[in-house]
Image (cartoon, rainbow, N blue to C red; front, side, top):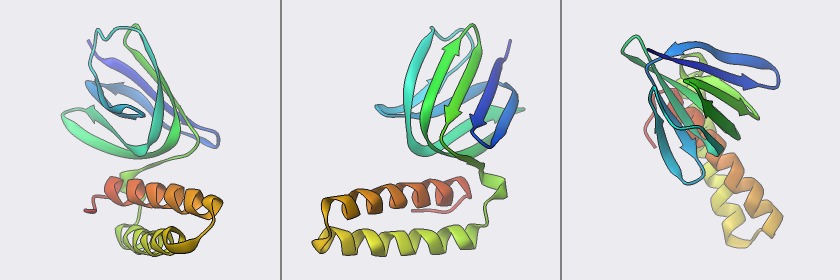
Length: 136
């Protein structure tokens, strides 16, 4: 028996297929989902969601949202999402380096709002880089 997994962003459905396992970046840490999982509703952090289908792992960068698990159906509603195989690794690495620099600059003397924006930009850039296969 397999899980039915749907990853839905406002502008597109990123994944709609069966899978053997899902690893969610929940706000409390990584959360593994297998068939027969208890019903659950959880908030998601910006990070990398991983779906195992046909014994292959598919990384998907997600930008926060929610996941509902019920009766072997995993519905994931996110603010934005991008499959790792559609992300340009070099561009993601450059964006991460730039986000790190902006974070360091905001941390040195920026306003609280600038610090929060820089933190979120760094999390998004890290998720995209990791989903593309890069190391942080």
